Length: 176
Image (cartoon, rainbow, N blue to C red; front, side, top):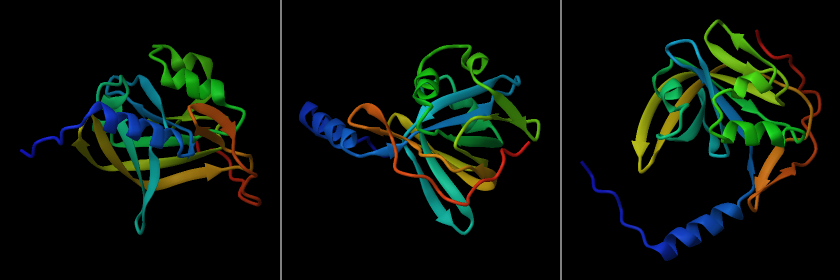
């Protein structure tokens, strides 16, 4: 087993300042626990991974209460947040047990919770999960989705901001 690289407080401080300077879209990743309970967490560590097959990569702290649903579940969804949803981002970043009681949501194909009011939804079949450091890297193959025109929610300098413009002509309703 490879050893984890050692860090110093100085390197960690530089890393945190650098990441704060990097603007990132805000999403809520959702999945279903084996017992059928919806789970979700706010992420900014999301990226496209491959165009063929279309896939995304998301990084998740192994200690968060949603990790089990994402690491073991067959499907998960990436709910892209619009500029009017900073409270949704804060809710899903919290440790609250009743997150889904405070948002409009539906279930895709009987197995994946979706946030109805999101800017867009990317539904994925989990391809693989690997661990590095204190986070898991989850890769999902895109199998469905929707998008609507609205400015995105962006996280930059430890605050939420309205992202620029919107994708014209991109409206598609949330899949059921």
